[in-house]
Structure formats: structure tokens, C-alpha cells
Length: 364
View 1 (cartoon, one colour):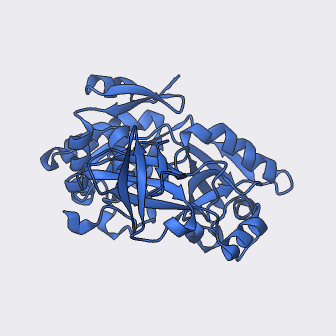
View 2 (cartoon, one colour; view 1 turned 135 degrees about the horizontal axis):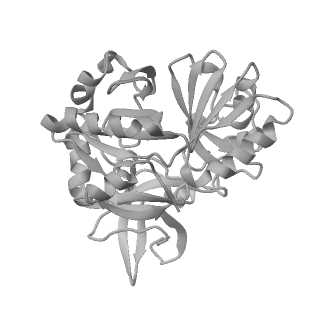
View 3 (spheres, one colour; view 1 turned 90 degrees about the vertical axis):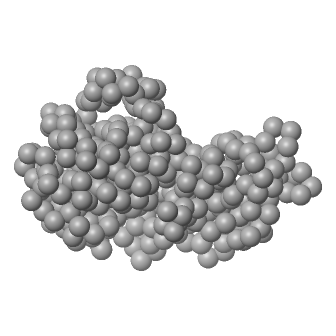
């Protein structure tokens, strides 16, 4: 089990620690609902230093990235980031990731903690004929996600750049909390705005302390992985290992928008055919029409009790106070408004297919 750099800080802050993707991680502090609301209405900080970071450099860096990712990285200018995925050769997904263009020929790939080794080997395999320079920085870098509608105002005193001017999926390499060069990225997996701060392990304690000092008047709190999960699920964002994996295609997962057939990439032909013909199943969002909590692995059944799919992610939504989930169903059940049933123990609980995201700003 690996420890993230601020392991002791989290324990001192009263975090409940659990094993996640081979790391000891804070899952919650005060409780999921309180932490969830802190991010939706104020500002909270997640330590997601378990994530992986690969630096791809050199004149062939873009060629490699274009080959292994589904999105079109040639559209990235310096200071921009892009959500993408690594398709495998069987129609599934190796991982989802964010690609940052740092300099002319320098890119940062941020990957899921559980897939660091797998992704590194996968990208290296395709680099054999291309020869880009690759560096795995995962063990040297920390990542804090400062999320919520008050994040900009609360953090502005810590940097000389205008945080309100950094657009969504854009970033600056600038001073922050007394550290000269950190990545301040207007990204995050909560749907409530804010930033992700990439820094060296040796710098993260200073940043953490100064962030909490600056955020104190705004009611800033540390937030665990459990609330990160409820927040991302309310937005309908996919979680690798739940909603997408080696057996799910980006087309059926609703990730056609990051799958660009204007270039050649791994397994592009198969995925293009699938897009043209339509997938055999689709990832949908659903809301329970009765009380109940849908859990990962529960069956989705039709009105006759016949299994038509399964729940990939599910929870009691803290913002909506109802059971919500994601799951794969045949296209005939994927239309908005379709009624399906979630098999919760002995009961088939009615659910309605809804348009994502579940959480919309007017819910405030």
C-alpha cells in the first residue's frame, strides 16, 4: 500500500482512510452529505495525489498522443487541456485521461491511479516506432482539487494570475501559495467549478496549509473520495472501473464527443463502424421513482422481470435527495423518459431514464 505525501495530515484532520487503487486515501472526514454540500455551495479540497502523470516530449510527442488517444490533440494550444480516452484493440477503453499541452512539444497526460502501470505499458508499446520521450512523474507529483463556486474568490490572494480569467479546461503555469511554478488548471470532476493544482510532493504541504488559511473565511473543508464520487455521479461523469473499462466502448459509453475520426488512432475503424451502425447498448442515467438506493452491480430489468442491463454506478443523490444511477441498457430502453426497473433485493423499483447531468445549477 502506497501513502500519498499528506497521509499524516489527513489522519490528523480526522479522515477515515481506506485502500483505493493501491493507495491509502481519505474517503471521508465529517460525512459524505456535509462534504458534498460544501463543494456544491462553497469550497472544498480533495487530495487526489494518487493520480498518475506522464510527460510526453519531443518533436514526435503529438504523433504518439494522436495515435493512442481518441480525441484530437492537434487542436490543443499551449495552456489548454482536453478530456480523452485510450481505446484498446478490442473496442474497449484502456483508460480515460486528461491531456495538457504545456509547451510546443511537451504534453502532460493525467491518468487514473489504478491504471498507471497498464497505461504506461500501453503507450510505450505504441511509442516503439515513434520515439517520443516519455517520463513517468507519478511518484514525484501531488494533485489537489480545490472545488466549488467560492474557489476563485477564496484562492485569488494566493496567486498573481487572475483566476477568474482561466476558462474551463484551460490552465496557467504560475505562482501559487508561495511556490513559483505550479499548474493551476480550471478542471475537476465535480461540476461545481474550481481548480486542480499540480505540484511536487515536496511543495504540497505548504500549498495545503496556505489553501486552508486563505479559504478559512469561506468555510473551506477537506473532502474525501466518497463525496467526490457522489459529486461526479450527479454530473453523469464516467468513473473508470465502474462505467467504463476494457469491455466498454467510448461510443456506447456516450463518449462519442471525445472520439474524433478526423485522424487515425488505435482501433478507430471498429469504433467508426460502431458509431455508424449504432451500439448494441448505451450508458444511460436513471432516477428512481420510488425510495431506494441503486448500487453498482444491481440488475436493470424490464416490466416482465427480464434482465436488460446492470447498474454501473448508483447512489442516493445528496443534492436531489433521490436514488440516481448509470447503467447499460439496449437502445430501445435508452430514450429519455423510458421506464425501467432496478432490482433492489426482492423488489423491482421503477426508474426513469433521464438526460444527464442529474444535477443542474438551478437545483441551488
